[in-house]
Image 1 (cartoon, one colour):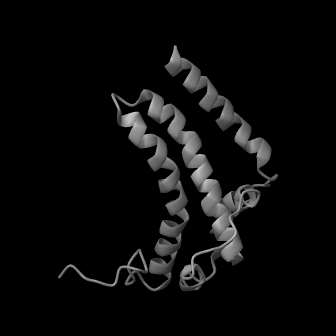
Image 2 (image 1 turned 90 degrees about the vertical axis):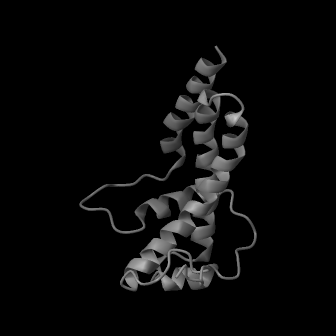
Length: 142
């Protein structure tokens, strides 16, 4: 019964997400960064006060995709963490044993890091794929 209630709550939350997002017209292929822009619009309501010091450098290394600034990327990170937390509810309820206790706190943390991974991939693609995905990893395995 608890699993069914958790599923209904998660489905209701997922159905309500488009209600809080701004209206978006889809015409032609999506420009790069459109999903990040939507997350920024959602996370702008919950944005924290300060951004990491190296975030501006990571955005510039990625070529300022979709004209995003530090504030927009931080808002997207917060929104992705909130969506990760929403996604964790049904996953934690369906997880076997005590695994749900691990999924609950890790899903929002993973959601918070998704925009960083995206920026790293864009930066690696912009430099011809020779850059590492994480700008902080400067050691090699060779």
